[in-house]
Length: 421
Image (tube, rainbow, N blue to C red; front, side, top):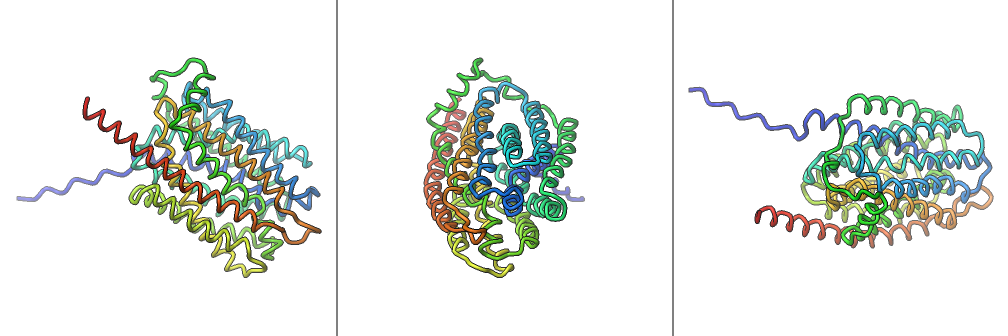
């Protein structure tokens, strides 16, 4: 008698779920690249446009403030429409605004273009997060977030080096035109093949968008997560705008070598993000976040005190630092997704994105006040930024611990109610 073959193990994700992850990651890639490319372009833009570090920080913070305000205005409507249609609307506006950046000839027009890009781009991430939360259970979201956040790695491996290469040998407008071309393809694929995401429309909602916004923002369960997002943004936005200027002027890395730094760090991130996502699901979101925070704090403080440094050491330290940052990003995103109820997810994600962008804009603006560059020499007070960011990371660990306790209590209560029913 021939023994029966064991049943094939069910795949972790269906074919459509894999497609959805790829599409959302690709869209995130273009949005993240549009934002992140500003940091490495800083070393090119400041002398070309003859602007100060403070003026450059306005370009970065202008995007963030616009994104935050736009997210707040969109929050009341976020749960009233098919999430696919909402994503398509804002992504189309984002592509048009990025084209404006690629055509802007002056600092003033570039600033206006960045503000317009923030109006549309700042909402895309929150809609994508709501789609992920609607489409995947919590026990798989760490892996999903890990894959989608690989957009950061892709932007470093592919986008930023290519963008810097084009900017160095052609013109600083070129990276934005590259994003437009890639974004048009992503938008067409999303429009043609992505299914509607409208399950939340069958639930009861406040008919008045303002009331819906106020009810979600005023929910006491959401206050600690919102505060956590504020400090998460501070830890990233303060250091980022001047990262390449610090490498060029303080660490004495040649400008032509910057693409290599981003490429190698990003290549390692292709491994880091999925690994962190799996670790977040298997070990726990909170332990993964704590590990990433400790690692990020240690490297950030050490790195900010360096002087002229060999290229290999800069790459190694940047890789380790980004591993800590990715651990914080993936684990906190997965944990935050468990906070809101289905009917409030769109508004919660929009408010979260807005709070993140506005606080990030304030952080970038503050960084412009702290960092100075006398006579085009080394940046001063970059180490002060590192201490401020490290302090926010420590406080953030406490807040994420509180969110973790809140999520576990809510899950236990929901399970007990299901058993009682």
